[in-house]
Image 1: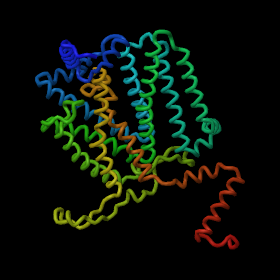
Image 2: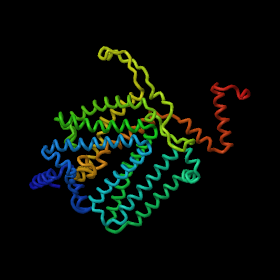
Image 3: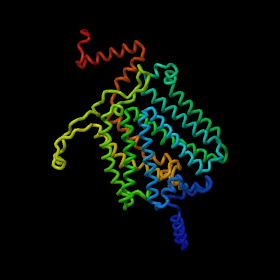
Image 4: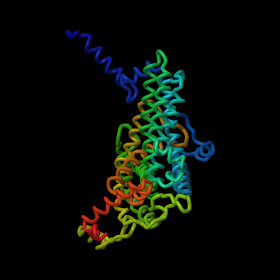
Length: 441
């Protein structure tokens, strides 16, 4: 097109209008608002308990927020210690409750932001898909970790054998229900919310089951990573509150480099100390197993090499500084350095992701469940990313073949299959020279 004198003015006007939009909003955001109806929700009002409001009324808003967050943080840490004391099964139920609440918070945001009130079956189908996915994951977990219990009970054995087919049939039922619920003039919104539900399931449900898998490997693999994320969150806030000057990232204007770096060193030190304390207790280091004799879940075993004190030589460069030549520590403490480093350097990006999500929809918090902290999802945004890392770390560097599980599966085979495996293993051991000749055997 030919250049016209008015083009420059028009361009400047459009540029000015785009700069006046709210931070993070794009043209597609504006189109979405007009297409899906209305403006986005405003931040929630002050949800601080009246008792705290009266007690802290003389403080500035900055220090009032500091005390509210501090008091509620101590309360949550106390609750965390209580559920740890109650054992792994209670922890598993708490993880499931947290998962459901996080799913509810995210689905509610989509429901309110896009005014999905008139969509038939949207909420019902969302909760139905949550049920299907949980049935699949919990079924896989029970079959994998408690194979003996499953094989002993006839109903569980049948459900285990056809578990994936049943799971697929349940999901297929929900899929057909969604197709039948499609109504004219709402097609795009319905497919949008269908995708919203599935992405939420991917982020929340999958990660929560990885947390449960980590828990079954030993409570230490559950407690240390979660504690490192909590420690980093607290220490980054403390360092940022008192020393923060340099902004870290635009998505979270209150985050500072001082808080980020201070949180890193504090978290690594905390991880080393916590790992040293917990590595000496079998109830934390042993995997969760089902005892056939007592018909109960146990966490008693002979500690592996990870949880036995070893002597390490200190590098010559550091010997002159610390004055020691050797150091006795648990091998798990070395792994805790990797866990705490991830929790403090990469884990916060889960929080940044959540911040970007909230800014995209112009909301302050996912919910107002916890005064001063927001919703449950606001507290667990980094935990889900951490859970995935821990699960991958265990699979890559820690977990090996489990002889007890192999024997359990071997005993469920037919006699002829067991004999075939026995002869194959026997011939293999003879070839390796670990047994006498076949004739002698």
